[in-house]
Image (cartoon, rainbow, N blue to C red; front, side):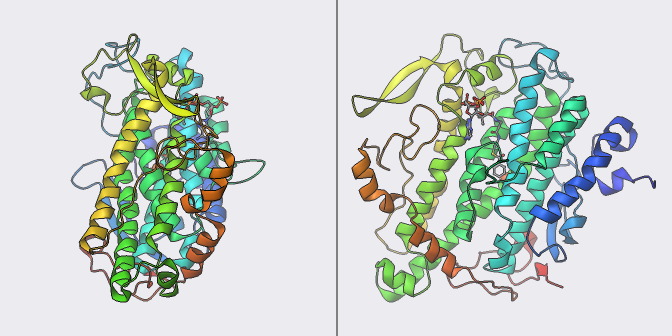
Amino acid sequence: MEAINYSEKIPNNVNLAGDRTLQRALEPWQPNNLKWWSEMGPDSAQAFDVYLRTAVSVDPSGWAHFDHVKMPDYRWGVFLTPAAEERRIHFGEHLGEPAWQDVPGEHRANLRRIIVTQGDTEPASVEQQRHLGLTCPSQYDLRNLFQVNVEEGRHLWAMVYLLHRYFGRDGREEAEALLERRSGDADHPRILGAFNEKTPDWLAFFMFTYFTDRDGKYQLCALAESSFDPLARTTRFMLTEEAHHMFVGESGVSRIIARTCEVMNELKTDDPARLRAAGVIDLPTIQRYLNFHFSVTIDLFGADQSSNAATFYAAGLKGRFEEGKRNDDHRLHDATYKVLEVRDGQLGERDVPMLNALNEVLRDDYIRDSIGGVSRWNKVIEKAGIPFRLTVPHKAFNRRIGTLANMRVTPDGRVVDDAEWQAHEREWLPSAEDRAFVASLMGRVTARGKFANWIAPPAVGVNKQPVDFEYVRFN
Ligand code: BYC
Ligand code: FE
Ligand code: FE
């Protein structure tokens, strides 16, 4: 068999060329990964030349290289942020001890579980987005979709590297299983709820990359604090790519809103029916999509009280967002935190031990961050002189995980009965008609510099290229 030139095919800073064990683990996985990509990756797009960014080093000033490549030839690399000298554990019961360069036996099962859960989301999102290319609103957007997809492919690869390198045989089995589960499959679903939902249209895609990729940011930040140094360094580098995914979402929604407002002013109307007839997405529909994606995403932080979360923190496996910047004892034995509960038919707060509430702590950090983009979207509406404002729904709205699961709570935080919920659900969450309408707008725009009617062009192109650059050669 011909030897694979690893450093060429797989850009890396983990000495892949000199690591026979790792090579042997990757050899069978690599073709299976490509097979998965061709079956579950972007539909009917494998022959396109796409203007993609590839991570080629960890140098902050030049880690990315741009070129037209076919996606199956994308060089999925393995990069870890360089090791800090003598890094020490900075939270939990091992505080002050040297960070682990290998997996401690007692924490093996939990670390593997965290890595597998993280790794599972990456291919899941590619599967969810695989049909979107067929209805792209422009070459620019198509390229951004594919960029997100190949980078999620690299994130899968990053977690598989950890499984292969540090977890032996069961790591290899888990790496195979990551290619076998399927988003939305009844028998073999992805692990977390939001990753089994559909991403059927581009409004959903932009909401997903704004809200759900931001869960990626917060979870990766928490893992970047880990005492298991290879996990910390791998996730730290993944965060450099996450920023672009959230940008795609924020700017995508913003451009949809800008176009809608433009047509609202042209027609001097806020009537959804007239706006829909003019081929743009009315603001109330955008609000309902926002409500859906926000609520489904905050479920991803897990139960508000979780003994898993307490164990992960105390053991030093997973920290808080920006753990190093917090001024407390980083052990949290005596600290408490407020969580929501329904008492006598009303939402109220209750103090619980903070260690058990760390999922909620991270969720609240996430919520604060995600509100920022929504106010920037509102600026676009305000600038157009339109008296409508988007809002983030109440934390208890439409929850499926934790204490609030299956409570009937309105977007403004009122507990209601089933009858009231059913009477208003269509105002709060996308209805089948909303989704069918948005789907009806999804055409396929492939001419250079042209954009679908329902979305404004971006202000600037990718990597200082013009907006009408040939981002995708369709061949
Ligand atoms: N859906 O004690 P709890 C990203 C399960 S996104 C279904 O609260 P824990 C990306 C839970 O497994 C970032 N099940 O759980 C974004 C447990 O099951 P068992 C992904 C759920 O462990 C866009 C039970 O309920 N990374 O990167 O404290 C595109 C009890 O719950 C869900 C991570 O998540 C759910 N939503 O918290 C591409 C980081 N939530 O044991 C990529 C790693 C909970 O009773 N994961 N359950 O059978 C973790 O840190 C934790 O597993 C979680 C869950 C925070 C997710
Ligand atoms: Fe990712
Ligand atoms: Fe992402």
